[in-house]
Length: 615
Image 1 (cartoon, rainbow, N blue to C red):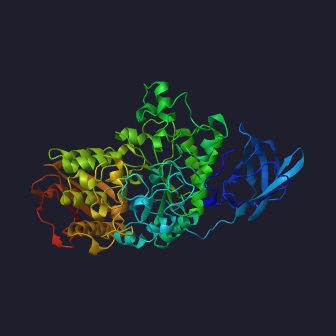
Image 2 (image 1 turned 180 degrees about the vertical axis):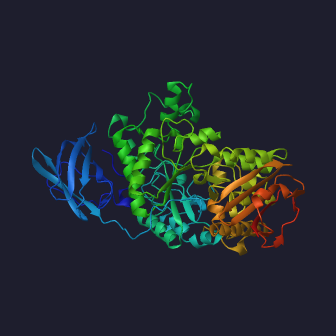
Image 3 (image 1 turned 135 degrees about the vertical axis):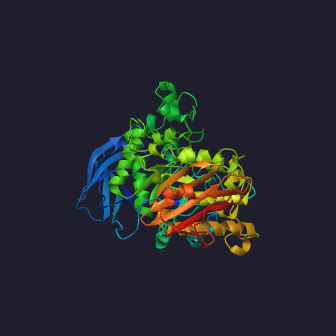
């Protein structure tokens, strides 16, 4: 029986139980609680405690029905299949445990009323702008939780790129007005669940708990407060989920319920990272198995998603967080490595409970067909309809970098990539981005050229899909992924002792304010104009490495002209009359200059201009 190292932190032992003989104890019950009035009545509890699997169970209070008791290989586990009756009321339901027909203990399980008036599960769509934050590196709003005794990593050292720096959820909450002012409508935090790993635990992608926020980031209540504060500002919360794997020190890995809880091999076997083996008609079974069932890295065990108990454990924890914290959408980590049959069931079950909820999956792959394969809709010969709404659009990420760095033919790369959108069920559901916590900072990608960087943001905020920006991009944070810790530096001004504060205009350089104001202007225009949210796209074959595209919706038309050259270009406008229609005037959204449409416009080197067309 494992001892809970975090018991003092999470109060995991403050359970309502009383045992008459003390022959066994309950250390955990998950989910922590549930709700009445959910659309699905099914509920599976994991009971964990010494010898608990040897007991028989009874529930006598009407409203919560015991359907089946499932003892498993490990006698310290008991899985209970329950049904929450349609007439169940909120309150505590005693679960009684018997040995040899003798009552040895009971546990009071709580069913709560749903907060039907609270905002939740709205979905994240193309009218949103997502801001991605690694909370440990953004702002320290509560220094009291910097170090937590009992965890495997206690050190806080801002001089080390892999140690904890002390940022937390309170720090995010304290800067929501800054984000709202910038034009952000949704906040995505890298995973916030407890990551009790001995090193590099700051990134969150190796969770060791499913129902507890990492205490160095805050509490469950702090996270729920984040959702509430976002919703007060008409903003949304994106939750980063990792169904494929957990951390090596996850409590169910330290003491597994049964042998096939994980995908395990005779010796450590890592995934090949070759996503194409999932759909390659010529792939060997062995290659496909290793791709899907190999471990992501040595410290991240691969969950056996074919096991029905594992499926239920993952699904219920995600539904729990939506209901508890008011989450609006999921970003799904390492999507291609999951069992797609399970992901289809998982998605359908969540959308049954929350019809407006949305999902986008990380698909770090190398082609549009590879990327499209993982989406719902079965557009490119999939054997499974995953029902996934959108993906992180890495192909457009590659293309925008080529457009701004390839002096010969970069515009054509952008044109050709977008022209492949016919393979997507809904291109507007794809998340487009310049960089993230794994990718080179885009300011460095474009050689710290401010004009190129502004052009990149002009594209991001006017192209189809859901735009996502990475924290600090608006203040010219830079660096390459050599190593990845360089991509995750602190936001200056978010921590005590910082000599400058980039959250304020006075703490930013002229160049930083120029870029900040550029993003703010376009992001807020986009937030208030459906033409850049849901508008149809029409683009033109690039000539002389200039890319031109238009967004139109009802009576609005916006034109975007991107000069991908390092020299000035005079662009004739006559060939675009099909999209410009009867417009006679054009207003520059960034400068507010309103002028008559002329025969041609002049574009500076690497300049992108955005015009609202008017009759």
